[in-house]
Length: 451
Ligand SMILES: Nc1ncnc2c1ncn2[C@@H]1O[C@H](COP(=O)(O)OP(=O)(O)OP(=O)(O)O)[C@@H](O)[C@H]1O
Ligand SMILES: [Mg+2]
Image 1 (cartoon, rainbow, N blue to C red):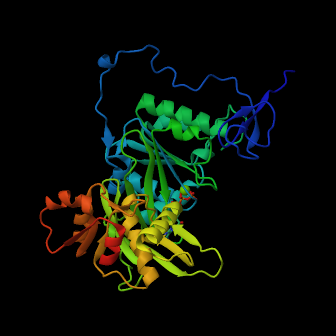
Image 2: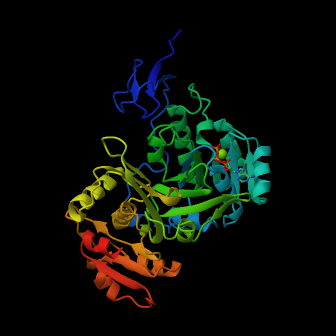
């Protein structure tokens, strides 16, 4: 009898080995090798589509066909809607609201095609109960609790959907493979077959994926390479706000974010994030400063808080949440050297309110102002927004799209903007400034004297 050939595959990166290994030589992870039967099936290319090369000039260029999902925040992240024949992966922590978002999409999406919802984790009853709560009763929506790929394929042929939803990709398995559902080879194979289907039939495939402890989508990294768009749904567990981000998008920008609030009746769009981020901002308290950050093309006002207090140990502590730790250490060093702040025996904690993460250097000035305000225990005058990047020599550098940031501040009702002097040219061209006071600064020292 022929011996069953097996191989060992790293569940993190897909590296294959003939022997079991404790540490993966490719990605360096420990204990990730799982024994799997070797499959003699063909390679992993989209075969059967076209076997000959064509000149780019001769390709009939279909206009990218997009469907609006009916949810503006989702459309924004997708770059204007779902593209026909594309494959989208939605990842996120357990219970964050992936299934809720996708079920709401089934109700709101435009077009007249059928929707097939494959649920591998919940029974159709459970999904129906959620549907009742969310007000989903679309006549186009077909449901099936299936996990075997052949059954899924049969259902697709029967219902001919324009949109296929698989919740979740880790539960679907191909019977021809012996490895367990959710393993690298299963996830890769099933995704590949679904991708072939999406490209040949022009079906939009929406996959829901689990994330690992480390926060990446469970299964091989190749999964993220295979699909067209990867969206991450994130948020603090105890907060009702959820942020949808594109990590990869073949049909749009990855800078845009969508903001939702989880309420009884499902996910509600938050079209006015600045107001919510600032809704609980304390007035006349030291250590709280408003920054204007750009999230994609949308300006957003964010509150940055700092707490500076005397250190109890020999080594002062620095902590940063929602903003790069190294950036904070650097800003403190600049403040010490250029503004004469004696921070060497003070702890500093900096936090971006509302679970937001800022990566933009344009928020430097606000973070530095918050630290100084807390250090001196003097509040920054209310109605002030600080914008600017801080350089190592203490200079305040110009930032991009200053007009949008200032207009957002004006819209929310702020009265004063401290901005880099280098941005004044652009500001001088702006109209309808109302009673907004613009104060240009060249250095961090000047900025501190203003607050
Ligand atoms: N009645 C309710 N009122 C308010 N929020 C609710 C209610 N029921 C559920 N939720 C919210 O919905 C979340 C679950 O959403 P959902 O099942 O869509 O998450 P998921 O990301 O699909 O999770 P999983 O990974 O387990 O599939 C809960 O964590 C809770 O916050
Ligand atoms: Mg779910």
